[in-house]
Length: 460
Image 1: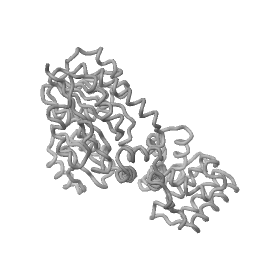
Image 2: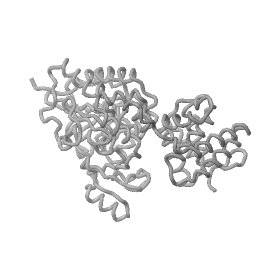
Image 3: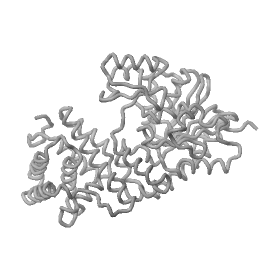
Image 4: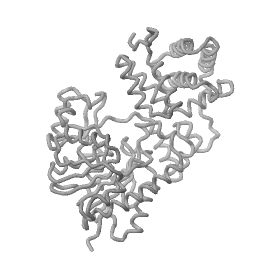
């Protein structure tokens, strides 16, 4: 048995680690990925056990309201009345019973009872045993009722907050809303961007194939490769040597939309962790200059680390609020500007399942107001004839075409770029045209949800 010895000399199990992390997430409002990484580093779980702990944490968070809906039928006074660690234990146990078929039900129950005995007392372990055995006896009752509204059914079937499902139904229709929710529960693909200043995508594909990897060209980005079953690509020599970067396929489209050319002066307003700045540097063949700004100094180091690893000298880092950039640089002094705006992140739920439970309608209104202020401020730095790309990793229209149309209404010197989507028009058939930009939903390419609009400053 593998694991990490606790002060009592006992070995941690993947389920105990998952229970502890989920309890902390609920009590402290912390991000599950940060707590999980920290817990795994402190433990010495075998790779398979670490994989199970990861699956239990992300899977339980993804399926949270469905699990609680079922548990409420079997827990006296409801799951909300339980101590947080007991609630977490029952959730991960039910997740295994309902969603994982490789673990026998009796093993799930006995492990849960043992954990309850170690952590609590006889009465709690007895309750856990009773609840789980009762569930196994009535497994056929773990079903979503048919007499529900579409929003209620989708919310429970695919485990999303009902207000969010209702919002997506009104914005995209019932069928698309359900597809968004289903896609959000899929495990994210592993994709890498090829550094074409060092190697072509075709040669990188051959290299990966020669090492036995299941690698295929991205259908979304001409710079992307999708890799299956290879684990963490950031641990490879190719990554360390700067030949590849780990990046979602949708995110790779943003630098391409900017169309930076060698010798240009480019501003990336909200640049950390630096993937898009680096991609622009690669597209410019490292000729010209990219000013990469982020509000946090420690994130500036992430950008410089990326640039150093990729061998890019054209990127210079500045730290500050993007709203202040107009005071730091001369008006109309950049050929290209990228505003990859802070957003609600509702396009990346498959990577960050906590997101869907922590957002509210008010958050969306607040962030959209900030996005418009940012766009109005940085737009003064674009030269006539230049291109400004506005992008987000959300699928919320208020933050996307809503911001772009509000900006264009108040700024007659700007319009949608003359060539529209530019190279991204190749994706128009399988995504949505919104407000002169392109909206990619998670189900379109099984990549992150993203919005990208290209704005041009007129030369009059």
